[in-house]
Image (cartoon, rainbow over all chains, first blue to last red; front, side):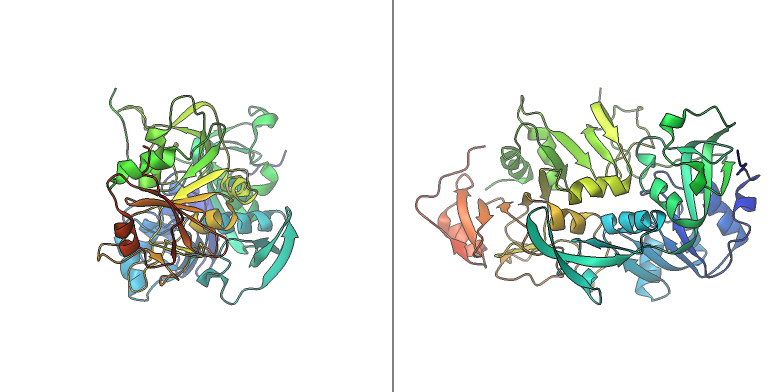
Length: 236
Length: 218
């Protein structure tokens, strides 16, 4: 087996430099690569383009990289919960491209599957379609318009998994899976941080979500905060 | 006139046994509370759940288990978890039978606007554009008029669109209406105590009234 293990987040991100494009896994604050984000803040790389479903909150997740003004452009589907984000966006410091969530997921998938474009009905007839090729296809007994969308091309993908082995095989837990598997497939170089790193042979091959071929660097993260954005409960 | 829970209750009657249902944020989320006993449905959350359950008991919340609104939830027996690409795959592939979502405006040909107000902070469309572009069966839950008292049922949407010709049915505090192929809001039911006149006054788009309009049963 090929050993994919690196020491820690600092080593994993050592060749991420200014103006690179990063795919960052997670949905809200769920399943985000906390250790790598902290290491990027410390390294202070600038001018990053981040492709991630959301942009974190003011003091957590990608919000940490916004505070330090390291992000030049965000490509996301929903950026609600972040005041600093709003300030930078309205002042023009931060470029923002909003795209439909399914389009975001599928553009990752296309990259991972080696396909340059997809056609999706999402956004047809809206401002999302401006400047894009529209084609009519007959499919499922219905003729309708589809938008051509390109596979993402990113320098690095940074994902978070529950368990991983030294060969880079990954298992995600619950809805912390979200965008992580397809982003792992889409990076030119993919970094995975995991809560528990085990030796090869300790994960059941039938349970692997992301095969190690997609993961170039893996390490066991530390001190996961796993902050919850909205705690909603009922009484017993 | 209905309150938010009344709208949710009325929509719950559209939910049939055996459906896979996606509920949007706001009034649609309340629909889950009113699904009649004996009607078995599976709730889809587009971040990757089929079989979403209620909020967890205090102290049992799990940071790894949230819904599309980023709230902590639980899983019901028989539930499954999947990635975001598969989630939108089952939406695009029309496996999800019913989509219920809110709107700022709906036009008489079924266009919907619910993601952007120019000049205000734009948060994004999330999964709404994917849902409305592919779902066969879309019910909109919303107020008939906006805060300024202006109709949200229009000849043509003023706000940036989320999707075109996709809304099939609308439930408001005043009425149940469907959108007919030739264009127009066809009045199906009145909310308790609401007159046809009130509905006419609150509807800017083409309103079609055929025969006697019954009062809603909730």
